[in-house]
Length: 173
Image (tube, rainbow, N blue to C red; front, side):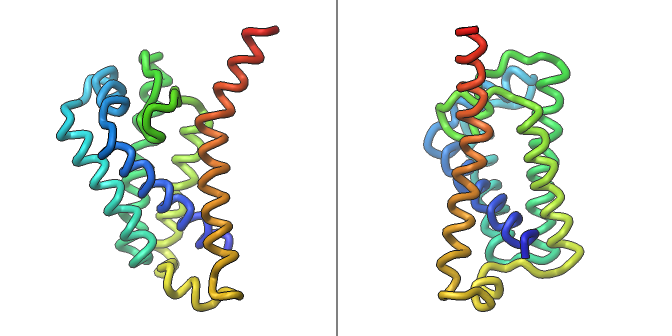
């Protein structure tokens, strides 16, 4: 059950991340430009739409289709962030949380690889759609949805707020 929850959490994160790219493509455009990738506003909007579709497929369909979308998306993100770290690219934000400064980190790579792994899990097991998951949950799935929401927020704190907090403590020390 943990693997299903993790895949839904990762898919929900894609829905949010894709939505932020639609609202404000500039941070992602800057990151892509720094990496030498096509970085027009429309490319970033297309990426945001892809993220929303991939997240929706993973949540709504699960199985090989949703899992493949989750795997491809997160594997590409892990590769992009690893490339940015390896080449010390001047990226202040990848754009996954909007304007929040979220520079690439090893935590980003790790989370993206684990998320890609959840896609593989969906492909292999063939399960994972939200409706089937909720029907087997107590209290109509409300605690499960709360778990996913808290998990998304915890990942946001890990990837966006913790690095800023650590950099503040380094400055003071």
